[in-house]
Structure formats: structure tokens, C-alpha cells
Length: 205
Image (cartoon, rainbow, N blue to C red; front, top):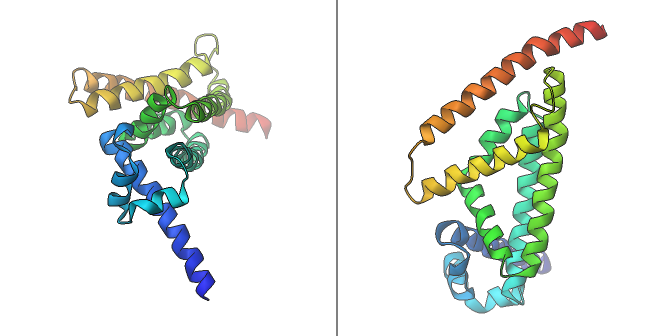
């Protein structure tokens, strides 16, 4: 029983350290992450940070890998939705997740282990996007030369990051117009998809 409690305490402490690191990155940026600041935010002694993570690189990698698993799970749920383009767009507009992703990309320029994970995450996201976006557009009867799935994936990720990043520093000029334009475009694609897909289903029957 004691060993079980100790194991549970270790898991809880480790998760608290990861949570604290992630929160600091979102709130203040990766440069604010030190063993002392992480320990303070987690309510632990600073020695415990290095007990569970030998180096700060180890800590950043653990946070990134955990967030990667969580994000990919949400991402797969989005692309499996009835309206995957809208679901992807709404997912990419989440301010905390987008800010965290941006901090890891910035950190990748300084720390090679983070750079490798960033490349893997971004390529995987675009690969997943392309498969589902292409399927959705083909079902809607759209020309993929006019609507290249990979380009749409980049537009969704890049444009949403720009909106979140500008909003974080107080810039809102034109944001309402961008959001309204995206909403109109998604509505148009969804209407076309709804109009075509039931016909395809009837033809198969």
C-alpha cells in the first residue's frame, strides 16, 4: 500500500511540474521557465523539479510530448466531425493551445530536441489535415486544383495563429472581418457538401 501511495504521489508531482511549466509558457513565455519558478507554481520544492527532470530540456520535451498527444487527439476528433473544416478552424483558434504551440516553435530555434518534435508535430498535423480535407472537398465536388488541401491546411493554421498572436498583444484591426469571411466561406462549403453527399449516398443505394 505504501509503495502504491508513493507511486501515486510521484505521478501527481510529475504532472504538477508539467502543468506548471505549461502554464508559465502560456502566461509569460518559455524564457520564464526556470526550476525555481516551476516549483513555486507547482507548490513544490525546487529540488524536485530536477529530481524528476535531469535537465530543462528533459522538462520541455516532456511537456511538449504530453501536449502533442492531447492536441493530436483533439485534432483527430476535429477532422472526424461532420464539418471537419469548421472544426479544424475552431480548434486552431484556441488561444492557450495556439500560444503554447508558438512558444515551442520559438524554443525550437534554441533547443535541438524541441526542434525535432516541432518538425514531427507540424508535418503530422498537415498530413492528417490533407487526408480529411481532400476527402471532404472531393465529396463536395470541388476541384482540388482550385482548393489544394495542403494549402487550405496552411491557411487554417497560419491565419488562426496570426489572429491569436495579434490578439495577445492587443491588436484587433480587421479581425472581425477575417472571422466573418472565414465563417461565410465555411458556410458555403458546408452547404455544398450537404447538397452533394446525400445524393452520393442515394446513388450507392
